[in-house]
Length: 252
Length: 100
Image 1 (cartoon, chains in turn red, orange):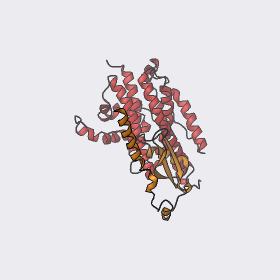
Image 2 (cartoon, rainbow over the protein chains, first blue to last red):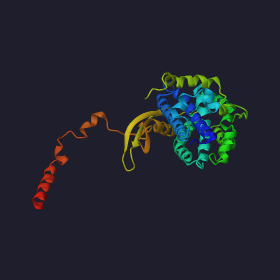
Image 3 (cartoon, each protein chain N blue to C red):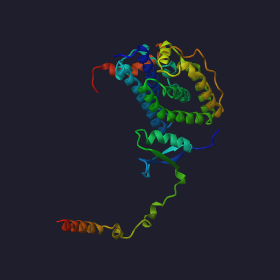
Image 4 (cartoon, chains in turn red, cyan):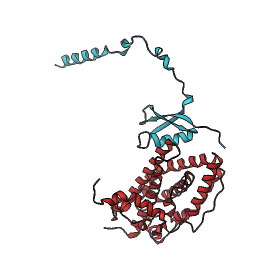
């Protein structure tokens, strides 16, 4: 028996954010600012993809396509990730700023999912939170390093934060399937309800590091949750799906 | 601006509660927070440890390479208690004799 479409959409969207940011993280492999960070960031990439797999497999167990099919055979416009996570890495300042924002959002999201009426989803949230705590700490330490480093590093994290917050609203875009999921208790809080705590948490971090709080554009980065993506997702998906598409029937 | 320079931290990992922390490697970091945060991903990425220590290499006092004489130049095998193996074997034989 297949679950309601909104259940599958919700789980897929949760997985898509993790999968896509995990892909972007993996692109730093061999290019991170120092070798220690190279290994560390690749490890974080694997964590994010591992989280995506948990959400995808739960969707699959409720009647959706398999995790591999979700990740590797969907067209870009079938992805429900926020536009923010698909953006190219640009520089290390943007990468850290975006990840800090994403992890701050993810902390609020998974905290709220602990009360989901879909118990396997609450269990996943509990597991994911244990790792995300370290991710958030990792990004906070990097943000601090850049903020108190050189004039250039400070400028880069500041620009990265401005770019991030210009599109962060997309993480909180709330559609009909979110409301259906909330009505059924699957989603204890709507994404839009997490926006104020997010702005507060980000403001606190920035104050701590003596940075200006760039404005969050309420209309910025919307569309991802309904499949409207930038060209960045199209080129990224072409990369991560390239091998799978050569022979979708292959066994690994 | 921060003046702190990167330095080498030695990393110690505990594989399980109650086990000793053992040296697993080293890394470069600017402070202890950063070193711990990197150590977690570098030395625990497959869940190998339940606890980590980081220690600035400068805080470790060590014997010098030429001090190996201090650490045992003379014959010391008599300290190894190898002889007790015979005792164990004797006890086993005695037990067997009593049992039969």
